[in-house]
Image (cartoon, rainbow, N blue to C red):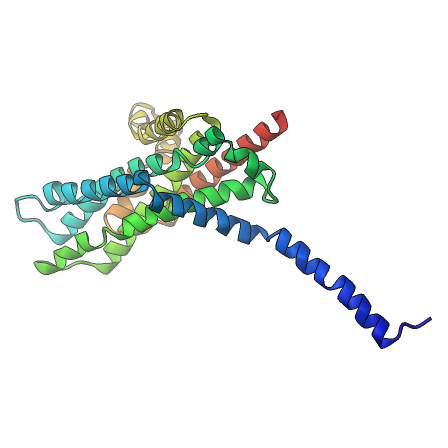
Length: 271
């Protein structure tokens, strides 16, 4: 029997709200990720620890810029910018480790990680959300430093290309270090242990350029290419963008994010 229009209306009324209710009860992955990002950013801006980290980073930027980048002797504008980005890279590494140490370790301490494990989000999406929140906070702080190199305009000339390349390098280095720190946070049960693990991995990768100096042949070249800073960051520092360096930093970021996801999956299966 063919249903009448009124029957079809009743069927639509019966079936229509259910998908909407299911959609509201189970938000999409993007909505879930953005929800975690907003929550984490809110934590940084609501707590003293977030302001303390931001204040410490900005104070270090101002101190090193005035003492080492500008200094007391006349310098060319390009030299000032190169020095600024050199010290900015070190500050960014430290900041990334401090920001990332709590991303997963704190949730494990207070039991929030167990709640995230029961959410519709996969482990990879949880890792991505945590990572993006820390990276967003780092980028906000870094954006507040743009006025420092622009002060060179007062008595000199600044190449906007140099400025863009330098901040691109700082961002890529920060992204890679943030992923390393997040990996440390994923395997640690406390924030102190997390920052120590992340710091050890970061320092090891930073020191690879020294190891490459004492290793001859192709192996030394491979080790040099794996160094986190020396060969890959210096082009950005001097105002040059190299595709190989971009690929390197993105590869390091993806590798440690994948490791973090695997750690969460392993803990879930063991639980």
